[in-house]
Length: 279
Image (cartoon, rainbow, N blue to C red):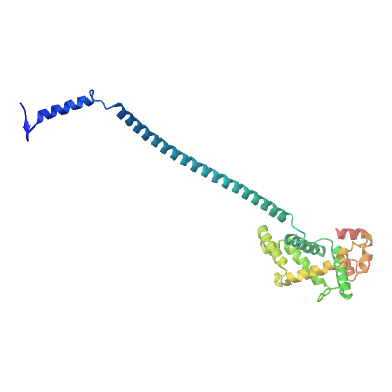
């Protein structure tokens, strides 16, 4: 029985369409060409994905290589900087530890050594009073002779006993601790260091307690001592048994010798007493 819709036999139409489909594809499977196209499309998709991954990996490798190259350049620069600093340090160290003769450090050491040396040499109470008096007398005599001969610098006056006594006092202050001051050894060393720095300044300020003594005056005294022939002369003292005769011919030393040994300025004590007094 035919079913009509809008004058069309629906069942007949469906039957015709089914027949046409079976005629084109008897088994219901797409043709081989269609399968090949599908496989080709899938392969192309996978290839494109692989190429994209390869490009990404290549980009990452190039980035790593660039970073490695930059790191190598930085390392080379750092090594060059280290070599430069080491070279500069060696040059600086050699200039510091092999100071030239006119460096401040060597000049300061020489200056303080001269002060301590002559301060000890002229000290009548630190060793042999006879020898100290002799050195004072010879030093003053050379200073007076130098000034009288017109060899002194402009404005330089002959040295006096007070000048040599100032060197003695300053030398003692740098190397001794006054017991009555109540200072520890550490405190005394700090005081001595501060005094040494004031002495090295060589300015006109007062440097030693109540004494009217400036660093500039100390420098002038030392310069006068070092400029005379006194420093270049070898000792001219006679043997100990002849010392009274030597002392008798030197004003001041003769009296000092007599007072030290109880003999008077001219009469000489026996040699064993002179030797005992020198000890």
